Length: 239
Ligand SMILES: CC(C)(COP(=O)(O)OP(=O)(O)OC[C@H]1O[C@@H](n2cnc3c(N)ncnc32)[C@H](O)[C@@H]1OP(=O)(O)O)[C@@H](O)C(=O)NCCC(=O)NCCS
Image 1 (tube, helix red, strand yellow):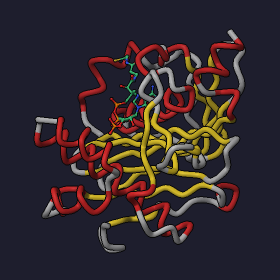
Image 2 (cartoon, helix red, strand yellow):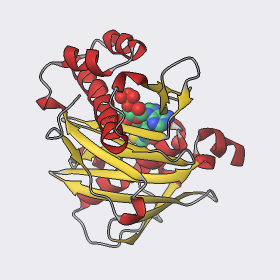
Image 3 (cartoon, helix red, strand yellow):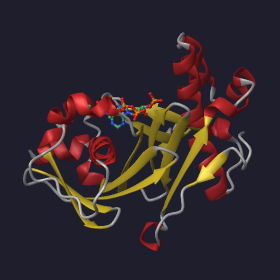
Image 4 (cartoon, helix red, strand yellow):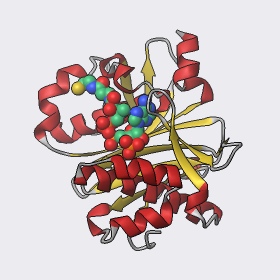
């Protein structure tokens, strides 16, 4: 398990008391195989061993260490090998209590942007989460036309690259709530900042999702929340 010093809990407003978010600098992890053996279920360990790219191995593991440490801090559950991060058919992760019954345990979301991995978790089964982290850089300038919408509204003046990164992270986090992955159509999501760092996100006539963003060390992190009817199964049913 990672030490409390390696895990940075993200302070959240009171209205998010049912949510926990943390980030982990994975370049500080020294013995990845030992961390994997101590924290992953047998099936997760086998999946991790099949990843060949070293950077991908590190971020994949770090995201799960971050999530399981967060759950331990929050609940006192101290055997990470009883919690399995499973994926649905579109790649959306969920925590299940390992065993024949595979009982779902709240809702979670994962993200990574070197050197950071981050996770969000809630024990509320009706909440759907999405979290995203991105470095502020000119990378998004080239693809801005594919995700910025004419009705995106910012309340606070920001440097253009920072603003692009805020919208990108919020919309990615929103697509993770829905679980739609590449099918989300980020430009179809309108993002309206309602107070500094607090947003409402909406796609067509769909339900409004709540969003928050934070800036740290040249990165932006965003969190979006919806309810169970907003994930891919519920969302498909509404279209
Ligand atoms: C799925 C997606 C949201 C992941 O985002 P990303 O920026 O590539 O990567 P991140 O590090 O932020 O997130 C990766 C995590 O997302 C999660 N994820 C993958 N598919 C997901 C889905 N359908 N729903 C929710 N979460 C998903 C996984 O847990 C993954 O981590 P893991 O591989 O360690 O398990 C993204 O790939 C995507 O499809 N985005 C839409 C992009 C788009 O529309 N682009 C067009 C303009 S360029």
